Length: 257
Length: 328
Image: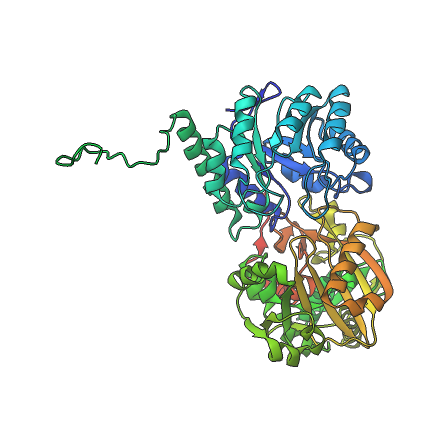
């Protein structure tokens, strides 16, 4: 199972906690899927006097690791402040760092991300950066102190799956020892299985489960797909080929006809 | 024999419960710290949509079923109920949201082109297709609360302005989020809303705009007044509408029709809805007190059914389906 900053988690599934029909259904989704990490947004709920505390208590009751995030932050300063607030609220050095660079696509701002990652790492945070699959960016993030990478599959909430399989495969090859998590853009369990087949360590999703007609059942679907994909990766799959290779010998044909 | 009953809280739940109990002969006293319906109760900020089928998109089955009692109940209790149905639309690029909404709800038909224009001429320029929920309705919440209170006074119900906890037996607690002092699993879900005046614009029924980021509904209040609602944020905070939320609501209204850009901003409101973890209501007995709470965003939709069940419980000893007994 994946190890993030010396902490082993018991599942390859990480779930966001927004947009569910109710906290009770959110809890069922965690239970049915066995998801090991819950991300929780600080910014939007942050009112005076811990106004979001009741909801956070419900999340804490799930009994999973909490990964607070800086969702919705559009600048380095905002992200850093939110991370500091999250550390205080949730008593954890973990932070999923989001610095949004484009309002419409919610694409990460790679420049702000590296800067914020460096500031937070120097301040003792353990940063999980939400990034693109750009190899050079990922290299800079590691140099800035990140020991996990969370490239997107596709823009947040689109459900388009792994848009750049080549880029994701290339990241896996270049960073064999860094835990890699596909974060955002997944809509279907088959896409999560594909991430596992590429050798990714985990996936993080929210909308695909929360906005399904039956979130708990969809969460279980994802959990099973992750198992299937991971097993495939560990089993060392066959190489695809252009020519058919019959699994039973065919006799009576000329060789190389 | 008349049973004396004390109700704490004169928001939408308390007033509906008082009406049901009084109609069945109970001697009712209502206690509330405020002199009448007003901004201290979260029902003051409600949309007033009686839309059980649309709510079924995210709410569970009891809301859809029990909510169907609401329109008739309000009508027989003096409220002006507009039974014109409701419409659901999307911007062209979110068309898939409309198909999904249609799949997950019932009681609708698709209307397009001239038929949509016939229902709501205002929408015909912007939208070519909508879902029409013909059996839904809407009311003006503030007017309805005021009317209901006046009827209760006329029917001999006593109102006392106090926040003190009564010592008498037979207390029905309908205080909403204030009952958190006793109900630890109750949480607040913040909502922000806006009231606009656009005298040149006419809608005959509530319209929901489905949007992946900024879902919105707009409810006509008559005389060119419209209510835009509502955000849904996991926070018990009651008093602070954020610029972001209001901007989102206003942008969505503008997307519905650009003429809303010229509307006058009358009010920005915010409060927290009382909810349990499954966002479903409960009737809960704890010692001598019965709590009716957790109506979430369905105060006007579910209060009639909850009031009926509460009266069945108190007067006839019938255990309601949403009962949550004291086993401790």
